[in-house]
Image (cartoon, rainbow, N blue to C red; front, side, top):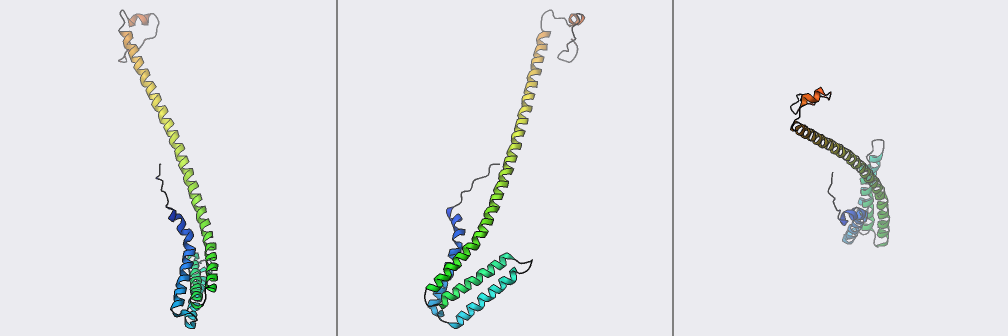
Length: 201
């Protein structure tokens, strides 16, 4: 019943919250490195990134279409499309203003989408904790009832044993009295008492 308490490290709680800004910052940095290595104003590189981003967006649209659409695949495809678009702009542009603007927009969108999943995950965790607490309280109640019942049975058994021991001692003491005659007691109209062996005295 006693479950070990596991203390979570602070990085475990912070890492999911930092994932969107880390991912968009990584794409921005890689795009600017690509810019410094010859992608600035390169039409071929821009056309490649536009084609890849459009293909990823199309794949996301097909994945989310219909009743059998897969949200995970669609989300991954759209995120890839956005990352490719951001990397293409960061690689093609000659200044920092447009890449930083797109980085801020992409980060805000990423946090908006992530907050939705964080809320759903929090609701599931709260429901699980409530269910676990209710089950734990129910089991504790059953254990308390069983403990009380076992204690009552033990008390009854002890009282029965003490009564039987006192009765046996009384019968033995009565039979040991001088001048005790069970036949005379019976003739006097008193009820016949059994002996310790179960036979009438």
